[in-house]
Image (cartoon, rainbow, N blue to C red; front, side, top):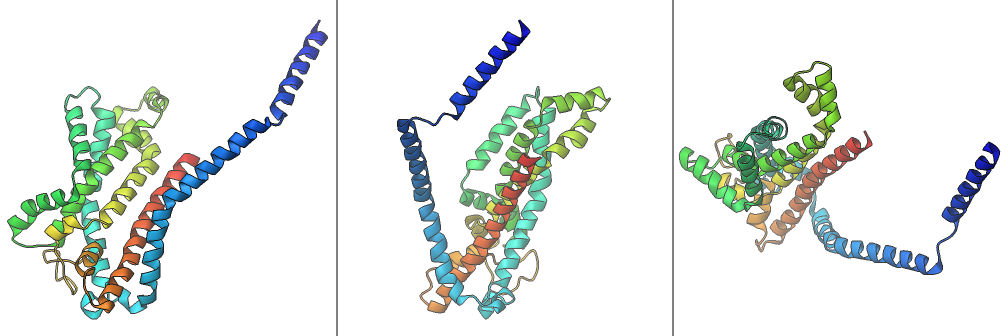
Length: 296
């Protein structure tokens, strides 16, 4: 009885294996090839505008690139002051937005399930995400520039912080929500308090996702132009302090793009390569962190 039963099971397994290994009908194969070709074709069509922009920037910008441009200000036909200004204001924005954004995301995800304020905080954060950057620049102008009577790097950093903040809040909240509930229960079963569970278990597991959101926020802030026009203005030389007008790469491109001088126009395209490299660098970092978190 047992031998016949095992024999029957083996026959069923062999039948299933033969069905799985059987080649697809010709019509199914043709359909698969057509769908794959359509998918690749649409992907190439979507990438075409991006690749054309990249080619135009590289084609026009690389020919005018010189190493000394990285160490001299605009007044000396370089863009080092704009690079430094961009890094400085993005750093100020990150200093303001990262602690507030991460702590807000933790509050929304871990400590406010029954708090009625949560819905309003999340709603306001979502609204700020869709606010045009020029409106953020006008807000920072009214809050910082009108009070200090001075365009400055601090005002520009504050405007970038407002842009970065909702991105960090929402990505932090989503990263924490992706942590399985059994990890929370396991920590509680071992005697961990709510605070210990959150900051020693949950946040540690969500760090890759949180870091990805921070990198994306920094990449977005590095390419913003409108907020800096209202707050940091521009400077053709090195800035004297954090309370003085400060150059940045996006504003340099905006100010000089329509200049008829061929040398200045060439400088704009070369500056575009530097800005594109900075944004691409942070985007790749976020992508690598995201892939690492999925692998773990």
